[in-house]
Image (cartoon, rainbow, N blue to C red):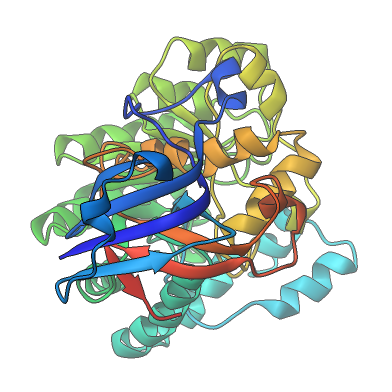
Length: 418
């Protein structure tokens, strides 16, 4: 089946060269075509161009073909969200009140809140109920324009519950139109019973969890929260090395709470991405410049926790790429709305709309290892895209931060009811 989208006001994020990422000054340059058309063949982007160049044959109606008139509307590639914890149980709004009263993220964690609280709730939740909660969130982010998402475990903190989360992620892969990558994050926090001997928990992750995750083929990547009060560089090094032996490529939670050395250990293991990175200075930038690792900012978490903002502008000026992800989770970023993440990035990180579009599509696709498949309007890529309502310009997308501007979602070449 072919689908023709015609009379597109502006086709955004067009890349004839199918680049895998965009870096430095190039992030401010955005390829678009005004008064455009786009042809989808089954699930693949087949062709696009100006309406004046559209063959008359494609305008003929056929029972096998579909024509969408996008007059006054824009077409974007779907957002790619390269860092989420979308599979979790319940919520943590009580901690929201504690934050307002002035407690820090670390103080809440020390009181048994934070990640440990989510782990307790998850342990009490059945796999089926966990799946139904996660499915609702998956459908929500689809309606908000996301077409690819990386989902982490990490709220289990024991072998049985970590496996439970990863099995739910596998079910989401099988039952939703999202392109999903799965990440094992057993080293998200040290459980209370291991607080006095954290290395024993690291041994559990390495010797028991990783082999079982690999045996069921449940994870594409492995992640560690390498930061102050969580896992040290040495512990992170051990876990990443063990995961890589089982074919799990590295990703890192790094430098959210302090200069932890997490960025450097991520670079050492050729991590796909280093995420959070609020505390990034010249030595971290230099390390990243010598690597293929994508620096990824999480504007929702920094906003929600009232933390310093990662120096994204400085990184781009140094020639680095930057990706944006939502960090969708119950404690520090309870939303997967990537349009809102773009708005936060533009206002708080001084990122231009053009840069924000690259950061939330092609660069975030790279950060989850799928930029050869999605992330731009390129021939041969999967037709994951959305059609906006009538808007004046592409900059209006992050500008109108509280408005729902998406009218039609297409994933794998098929229109999704939202």
